[in-house]
Length: 261
Image (cartoon, rainbow, N blue to C red; front, side, top):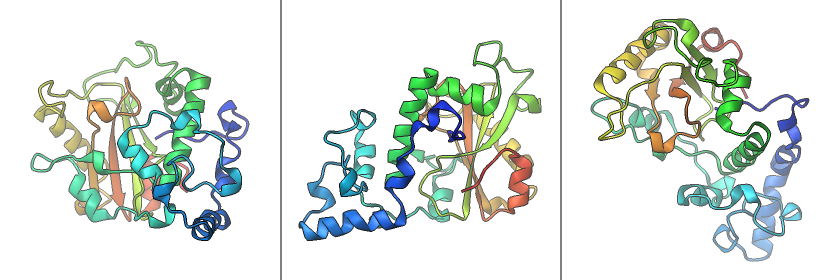
């Protein structure tokens, strides 16, 4: 959900990441593993998917103290990763009868590494990911309370909503478009469960039906909202929408600033 800025911005100091993992380079560590009888299990997670010629002497600071889920992902060679298909995405979507198990999503291992390095630079430059998102991506001032004050009730005013392409999407099939709907208003959680209240769920469902299902078949639309413990950007309300094989002209109508990879 973070946006990689143009080269003129300070955060563009990450100049070696894309060079590390070109198609040609992906074969280099695989050959090195074979020649030296190594496997991803025998390498520390912070060396997997990095060409042997570019291995750091120690674990980079942005990869330290990672949760087990991230370590497991980073330990996986890219060539062994299987992208998550639409069925899995639909199964994890939000509905009263389903589990909203968004914790099961993960990024392509090398993309996760890039994402973690990028967010580390963002935090160093802006102080927090939230400040960067609000200022640079949403255009909602500096994230002060007045900047984020909604004009009205949830989904009443378009100015309280932004739809952006997720610049760091999960490792899903490339025919799935991952959008993030950001809101100035809160979407209430049940404090006992950490999940959406029935009223908030119904409000999001109505918005998704009106905004996306008018042009995309309902079976090809799914939305979900991170539990508080899983949010990578705190203090700015948002939920996720995935579209399966949508008309890209329609997607650009809904998210005019999107740049698709």
